[in-house]
Image 1 (tube, helix red, strand yellow):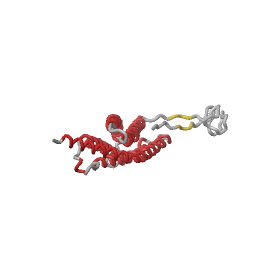
Image 2 (cartoon, one colour):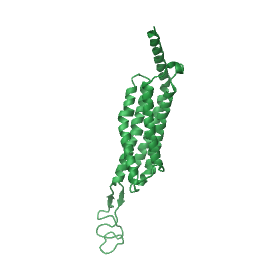
Image 3 (cartoon, one colour):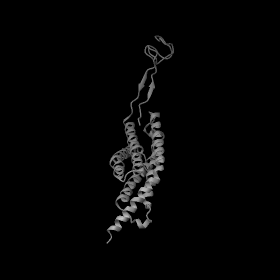
Image 4 (cartoon, one colour):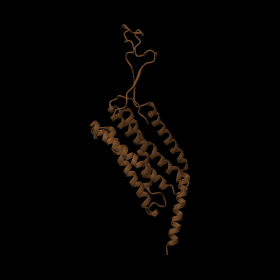
Length: 246
């Protein structure tokens, strides 16, 4: 996602003014110079805009690229191998974590620079909520993997916290998509409005949303295979435990 400096057309051309006064070669056609090409000035991004752009890029990469990759890895890989967890964990924590926390910290600094009230600004409220949900999701995933509940409690079925983990993960991605959209279309103008968010950034946002959800729903077709493998795994575990019982 890129935010570029805007362009402003030049005023009077070289050798004359726009009123066609004495010495004017263009007779009212200012801004063209001797070649007839308008003079264009590129306005660089301000330090505030650069910081806001960096914040946007980091959070977009973290929430709309890295986290979805981790979700898709879990969605597809778990139907073929039992060794999917560590790849999922590395993506969601080790790789995504630093990017997300850096983006959030930069957003917090921006709010202080703009003197925005965190309790009243929608973008900040959602940002705080997203960070809290992300940390909660990490803790929940760790708990599910390392603290196994007795299978008899759920009659051989998956425990409810597994479904909560999936639902919370998808909710985070949906909220993050809205947050990035809000940042581009509304929050960006707090930087002064000197530059517009380029269409390429908006198109990239839409593409990321469509690609992820399309791949995720396609992956749901593998659920019967996943449940079958999980059932076999639970049965093998129960048989092994019975064999160990004196």
